[in-house]
Image 1: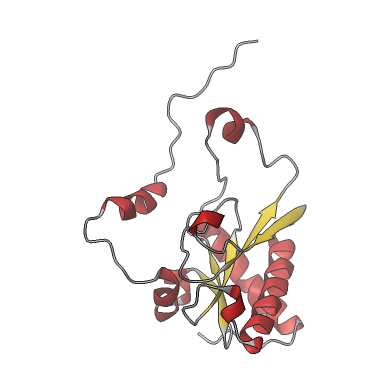
Image 2: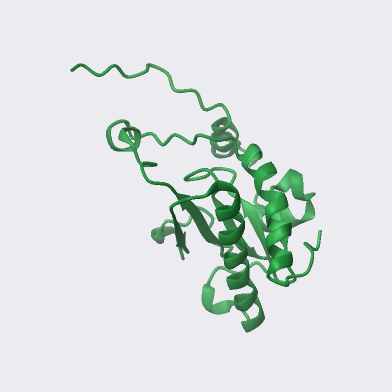
Amino acid sequence: MTMHWPETLYAPWRYTYIKTFQDEKRSEECVFCEAPKKSDEEALILYRGKHAYVIMNLYPYNSGHVMVVPYRHIADYTSLTTDEAAEMHLLIKLSLNAIRKVMKPHGFNIGINLGRVAGAGIDQHLHIHIVPRWNGDTNFMPVIAGTKVISQDVREAYRMLKPAFAEEAEKLGLPQSQA
């Protein structure tokens, strides 16, 4: 059997990401410090707590990939206050509940990359990744072609998840998002 590979795989939303590396006047501002200054929809923020917030990953590993981020600009997990750490863990629970409700994944990867050498793309501002996983979501593309295919636009995923975050926050007794 002969396999025919497509000559072109279109992912136009990736241009914004690629362009950040091409811009000579690349912003030195931290994206995680800037995001809370914007509207929820513009920044893709799903929930705002007192010490931390949940935001969609604009360049996801998989559909529904979110991050829990402290407002405070810190790089190391050990720098979190007890209140920040506690709230971040509640926001992980909130994220799991909301993503399960809407997207029905079969599992999750949850991780923190501390430092550039550990894989942190933004190593100066701590963040926790929550990546939903489905049976069969790893196919031949990453293995053979070195290409990951994200099957859903991040803004579409945001619109699906935002109401679920509000509903699940209420069930957990968390205050309304502090937008």
